[in-house]
Image 1 (cartoon, rainbow, N blue to C red):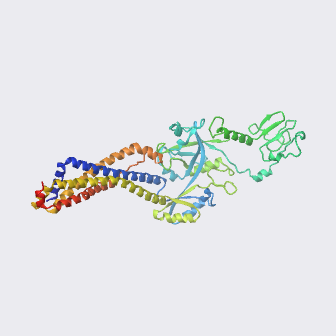
Image 2: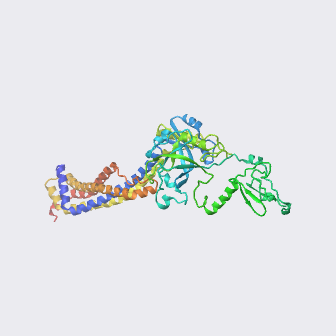
Length: 548
């Protein structure tokens, strides 16, 4: 018999018992769809994870940080560090990054801690933009920022402290490209150290002997370092914060913003500005408010510096990328901005200090991105950097571990779907076995007419294979439909909760999975029909003809 004859007879025999054949095909459809959908979920999660890693850097990047930032070690990152690392073999280039944290104010909204990352122009050009342009290099101390698409979520109302995004599920109503945006500069100076405190004149306490006990030790109540003094003298004179009487020969700093004078029955109390801020701070602890009824951090002692928002990274407020949560600035511009607004004695946010708590004279980098010429050399370069005393991390190690985990996840999901396919295979075997019983006489006649055993076997295997192929093809169509439904209705919420963004897909069906699924279903059908086909070849022709 020709192959075409075998196929024609197989299809004809299935069509004669089409209801039973369709029910058997339906079992294969469900089994195939179960396996494909389960595997597509694992593949989708892996693809989303790899996309996230790719946005954070590829397999050839090493991220170098200093142990000094973690309170261990003294090595810092600066231009000399870059020169030393460039001497390592297989290092292609190094990109420095400078982190700077600062509060921002835009209209009636503000954010308390926004991280600004200073990077090179080459790095800025690699960031995909939703609108605007990348920051330009400036030398006059002005600053342009590229906002991450999710930074605005961290802004709250200055008057109430309410976060619109988290409390009301809405984005703050402010156009960053047009609004006036200010940075808040609050300085923590290091120039008031212990030696300078010792050199200041002691506070003079003129107490009337009639009201003082010679055994009293006022030092237990008032220290010479206190920011206020008490003068109960009858002439009503006050003592300023330099230790000189206000009516003495030295002229103190008695401006209204630095001293508050209140008259009472016994004399006059004079408080310095530090005492005032301390008192206000105590009230803040009780009320949870640092400016009357306002929740703003832009108090009177915070300097407002205008900045310009020149662009926003691609994506909505829920789409995640490696550039979503930070603002980016040109490296040289950020250095000029910091040097303009902070003196050498000021502690700059995110900058390390020495053992004595003093800031360094020059700015230190927060991270160095080392680009290696090949993924095979990453491990060697990473070990060399760690031997030099720096902390290094590479995506390659993390990716390898993640790949192993996803292989296990996909195997488990595929195993769950394989249970349905096993049930389908049993259904095919049952259908084909019933077919051999019903066609016993037909098989006997074929043998008597000289039909070979291989042709009889091929006819039954072809019927089983056709059931598997048809069920696999329809199962693939059903899998694509289910995948679209999952990606459209479930993925946006699920993937956003795990930080992947709405655009990420939770179910991915590649072309190789389609081909393998159809081939697998066909082979399962043939295996399930093998034993019924063997039974058909072993029937005695005479016994088969006599069978009614």
